Image (cartoon, rainbow, N blue to C red; front, side, top):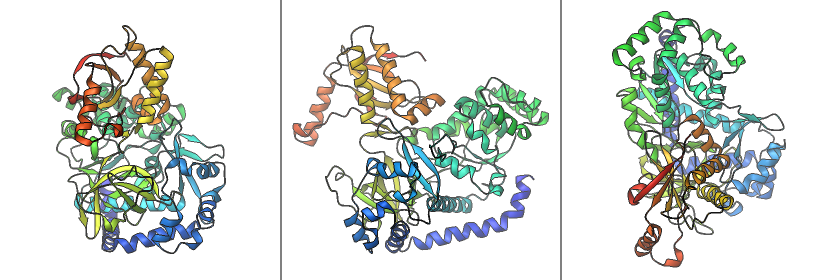
Length: 561
């Protein structure tokens, strides 16, 4: 059934549903303190009989103040012993008897091992509810959003399995692959495409199938993916046109036979569409999404923090299409729901998680005080602390946000960056400890002396990371070996950096030599502005894409792929 006909049949239902979700959430934002207390106590009650609940006297918690007294702030390492027990099949380590485990959402940890976030029935329900609220806001502003095919671009929810057989993968994949069959029937590509392991093959297959259709809504968290699929279409447009004409999927790409078999109904010959695409490519000398999807009504992706650098490229490939931020969301949970296209801010998702905030500047205190959402001030910056139905309580996710306004009485927050010691320009979340470990391991292996260094993201057509060392720090001829080894180690330490490198969303690191004495000058400048020398800590990772503008590069070494 064509989407246009399906939408006409379902429009009255969709209209009523969108208005209901919008209305319920909007009403809740008028009393955030009450809603947040209720959200917290529901989670406490549900899991009070868990090992974590007994260890922290959940049965005695009646107020937010009780909760803060009984539970300390923590990061993933604080929860790892409990999560490890859940991975081994002991659900009661973190959850009460009503909860069921669906999967583990995987993301990069601060060490080499990934983080495993339990996705329970309650967590999944809350995640989907908040996504529907996002969709309700977007739909009421963009009625043409579901008029044609929808194109979500996500990672698989089944990248691996625990010893107990529980799937481990991406939360984005879970949301797309467990969608109601009516929703999935509107997808431009079947969800098995997301299970293709080779990134180049996955993007090619996705665009080979999606190019057959008219697409009105594109959604994917990482802006780099928005650009990558557009470039895939253009780079391989001759193969794509031929495949559409012949009803094939090129053997040049590594797609497993079982997936090829599952795709057979989506690969039927379409000579008419092939001729249309071929003519467009011939006339324009290219094949961009803007050329083949004239009905594209909305793009949904992250827009906050350093990711804003990608947005100027959108118009080149997609034309003048509105872009709405997907919200501040992570494997650990959703934090905001954008309600307009402008900017990257979103309304705090007060019905999903319970939130606390550490004011910027107080994050390094041994026992920092936290604020509740109704205590925040516009224009101020805070680190987010989460309590979710994934078994995380007072969890410091190290996301720095700014309050840009209020929706009724609830804060609107915009993502700034992943804390002082984390860099992420396309979701890789590199930590200072990872780059330090990667470089120091190589220094020991090669027997070289590198007194200090810095790693920083660099914006380019394909962004990459630069390693800065002072001129003369490495003996002649060792630079390329040093660079390759650091790159190899970092890919081994950070699964998401490895994924972005493998898919081409990040380029190979580049070694850049800066003038001798540069780091001493930066230290002196910092001390002059900020105070005592004994408090200065050299930043080995600088997450600012403009950092290179402050350095004078005298030479550089680029590794061959």
